[in-house]
Structures are given as structure tokens and as C-alpha cells.
Amino acid sequence: MMLRAVGWFLHGYARHRRRALEETWRHAAAIQEATLLRLVKTARNTVYGQAHEFHRIRSVADYQRQVPVREYLDFRPLWQRALAGAHGITWPGRPRHWANTSGTTAGEKLIPVTPEALASHRKGGWDAFLLAAERVGPEHLLGGPMLFLGGTSALKPVGRGCLVGDLSGLVVRRLPPGLRGRYSPGPTIAAIPDWETRLTAVAAVAARQDLRLLSGMPSWILIFLERVASARHAAERPIRNLGECWPNLKVFIHGGVAFAPYRRIFEERIGRPLDFLEVYPASEGFVAVQTEATGGLTLMLDYGIFYEFIPVEDLGRDWPRRRTVADLKIGRSYAIAVTTPAGLWSYLLGDTVRFTARDPLRLEITGRTRHFVNAFGENVIVEEVERALVEASRRTGAEVVEFTVAPRYPTPAESRGGHDWLVEFRVPPRNRDDFARILDETLMGLNPDYRIKRSGNVGMTGPRLVEVPPGTFYRWMREAGKLGDQNKLPRVTNTRSVAVGVLTCAAASTREPLAAAGTHGRAQGVGPFEFQAG
Image (cartoon, rainbow, N blue to C red; front, side, top):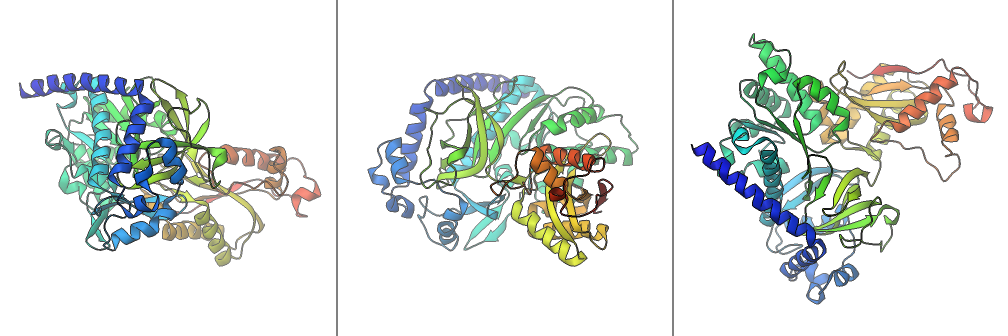
């Protein structure tokens, strides 16, 4: 009876929330300007507000004249003052909680999480839950546990009296009372700091539960599904697919990385269709939710966040053009800048998006503002792969002409993905297995996200070295129309488009001699071959 009453309440609240969202979408520009002015008024007496004369701002135009677009490195000195004990730096008071995240430009970052910012994140999570309930029925959803596979809820001390942790862990610590009892794996397991230990414990619990909802990053959820299947086999309860384990599982909420490369293998693991709901959360703010089953992320305008959109061709300019929801164009590629109640002011997220529809505004994430690879949540940047290559070459006596790194996605035959390193050597390494191993070890030392994903081979396999014949990259640059000193080979990409082109040229190189300018005066190789770090 109680479950039915809660279901009726959620039905009613979901309808109310849908009407509120529709009203917001009809008045998008006015609501966004009101949001900005409210944020400016709240922070006008902060160090940042006084430096940028917030008391004089009366409109979006005023704000954009007085407040520049900035990145994490611009804010870091200010936030270091807050961590050291200063109050009222970029937001009133002093944030006690901080989220750690890896960025493409500054490595590991600490982002303030004020109470107002945390409320904004929770609103996004609540909307995602309501949309899931709307699709499968709230009574069904609340009839059993709902599993959220995120970061640890354990916090570590940082600075003067502050705590730092994963944003997902911070949110889980403050679940509403009505959901707390349905949350899986529960607070004890969620607080386990070691990912490998926590994942094993989550799988052991989930294998015995009647799950109704899954939520998490697709790459990690696939590994989790493997662990659950192993737990069932260990308990002498083998299953053909995980749909048998969770007959009432109906919806998967996903975000963090693109789902398309994982969808086929995910459906094979589950063994039946599910409802898929995409979300776009970032440590800096909850940006968008898939409000319609047909797809596309809807920009959420009433979370207390003001959005600006920078044409990608303007990135790097001192005063780039700054669009708002009032004047952006469908089909154009933009970088997102956010102003939030965490004290972020016209802060570049690092993501690029393209809007596909209006009323409501729907977007798709198109990439990052800089080259990177983040297929599994590892967030590896150019500087890191270059440093790894230098170290591997130094320790194995290799000399490299060109290289590029691309993701290798899981397949039904290979459940874990990893990175392909396509390398053209001038002098090959003394031991190719050692070369791949050193790449792996160096990246683990440089990047905490990569280290976690590689721990115990649980999230990613080791890097696979794919050696290509001499002249391959020259051929690819020539055929792609990229010869000349104004063109650079992408050192790292988040798709396989460059890798596929290079491998095609490698295959051609074994059949057709290149011009001397393309071979650097060396004999032709016999084709690509592979070595993988274990």
C-alpha cells in the first residue's frame, strides 16, 4: 500500500516537473538572464566579484564585457587561497567540500562544491530518476534496489579543514530519505576506497539482488557485469545472460563516455532490450538530461547554471564571441562555458557540443576542446602520451619517427578495451614487449584515472603496440591533404578515424613502394605487427 502511495506521488510530481520544464523551455533566454543576475548579486562582495565590478552588472551584455572566459588554471590560484583558509574568494563563504577530477589541460583538478552547487547536482540526478520512473513506472522502479556504480563516497582531508572526493560519492552521501533504502550497493560498500575491492563487493551484492535500475559509465558497467556473472558461477548458479539474474531490470542510466561503442555488447550481456537514459553530468555542473526516449540531451536551464557557447574557431582568442541560448545556431560546434553557484565564472568545461533542435534545446557532445582519449574514463592527454613515449624510447634504445594513440573498444570476443599505439620506428626497441610495458607504467605514474582503469586489468587492457612500416605516416598525411608545416599529426584521438586511415596506409605500404621523400630513405617494412603490455 505504501509503495502504491509513493508511486502515485511520483506520478503526480513527474507531471508537475514536466510542466515546469516546458515553461522553462518557452522562456529560456529570460530564465537564463535571471539566473546570471542572481549569481552575480550573490557574489558581488567576493574577491572575484569586486575585481570584476559585479555591482555594475545589470544584463548579460554587461557581464560579458566585464568578465572574461577562463579555464581551470586561471582559477586555481584563487581556489588555492580558499583551500588555505580564505573566505569569499569566488563565492560567499568557504567551500568545505571539493571534487577531484582529471582535466585535459591541467591534469588532476580540485573543483569547489558549495552547498548550492551540490543542490544543483542533486536536482539533475532527481530529474534523471523521475524520467526513468516515467518510462518504466515508479512502482516498478521502487520495487527493488537501484544500483549506482560511481566513485567512492570516502573523503580525504585537503587544505585547511576541507574534504575532497569523487563528486558521485558526495552526491550519494546525501540521497533523499525515500531513495536511501533502495540504493545499492549501500553506504558501507560505497565507502570502500579501493576500486578493485569495491567493484568485487558491489558485484557480490548485486548478484543476489532484484535490481530495477543500473546507473554508471558504460565501460565500467561492462566490467561490473562480468564480475556479477563470475559471482553467480562461483555460487553454482550459472546463467546464460544477466537478464536471468535481474528479470525486473528495465532501465540503464549512462553518461561519461559515448555509449554507441558499447551498446551491442551491453545488450548481449543483458540478453533483452532495456530503456536507455543518457545524462551529462560534469564535476563543474549537471548540464543535460535525455528528456525524450528518441534521444538527444536536453540542456537543463533551471539548475542555477548560466551557459555560454563559444564557437570553436574562437577558442584561444582574448575576447571570443559568446553566444547564449538566445542566439546560438543549430548545427554549429561550440565549447561550453558555465557560470555556477560553486563560484565558477564563464568557466570553459573543455567539452564541445552541437545543438540539434530548439524548444527544447537539444545537444550532442562532439568532443573535447583539445586532443585526448577518454574512451573508458581514463582521460589521457597529449602531454602524457608524449612523456610515456620518450621514457619507453629512452629505456629501450628506440627512435620514433611518428606515432598516434587511439582507443580500441570492447567486442563480444574481447570484453575489455584499451589503447592502440601506432608507431613508426626509425630504430626499433631492443625489446618490443618492454616498450609496451614502459608505456603502460609511465602513464600509470602520470595519470591517476588511467592508473585506476588499468589496476588489475579490470577496466582496460595494457597498451597494444602496432608497429607500422616506414613511410606510413607520411603516406597518410599526404593522402589526407595534410602535408606542410601548418599541419600536425594528432598524437592522441578519441576515435579510431585516424588509426583506421594510418592502418590502411600501412597495408598499402607493404604492397607499393613509396617515393623516397616518404620513406626517409629506409627499406620497406613487412606490415604492422602487435605487442601488448600485460
